[in-house]
Length: 105
Image (cartoon, rainbow, N blue to C red; front, side, top):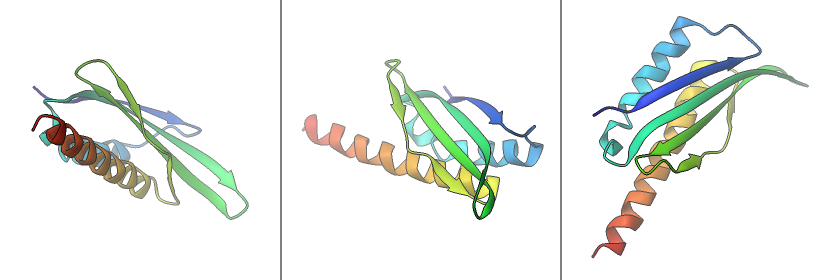
């Protein structure tokens, strides 16, 4: 069983290279597939005082249908923002897995 992903682009039309990067990053979460059923990735183009940047937000959906919202990750490059969001997700899921393992001992 795999992990499903929905991607939404806000403020720009999106690009195949960003979607490809998200797909590659999703593979990193496959080791958590017993606990995770899907994720929602939102990538937004924003404009700040230092120019344009991309804000990526990843929400994890567990097999129990719980939502794990993760913090926003902002970068000037959309692929870097996506990688940062998945970095955070991997750390969070690893941490939650370690805590769960301790409870079951």
